[in-house]
Length: 134
Image 1 (tube, one colour):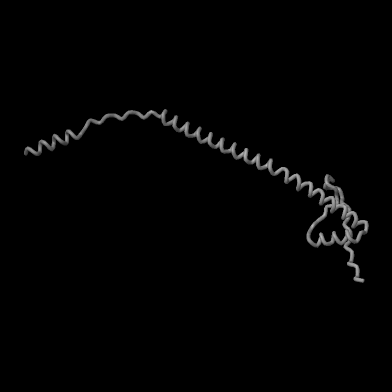
Image 2 (cartoon, rainbow, N blue to C red):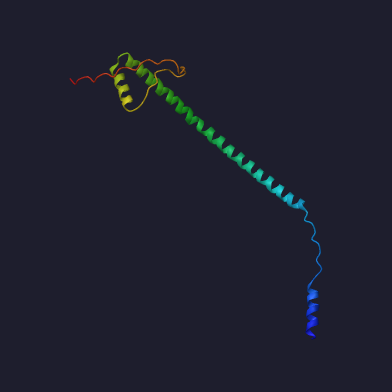
């Protein structure tokens, strides 16, 4: 019998009075969230600025080769235009060159650069029959 009262006393001792929980203050959590978001935006801005600088540098380094390519293209178009004019005047060598270029799929724009697209270009020479061997 002695054991029974002790068990009841132990059960009563285990039960502690429940205290109401203190309300959680949201401001520290909100401050951490704001700092995290601002840090993320700052990192993204820094990274985008770094990428922009590298792209500007790449573009600046590729300007010289592009200018050289434009000059070479202008020279080639000038030569092709003069060859076309010679072929229209009846030069057999120029006509042969134009025929070979056409066979290989190269098209020649006989209008000089800067000519409006609606301006008609001179007509292409008729392909001449190859001369019979002598």
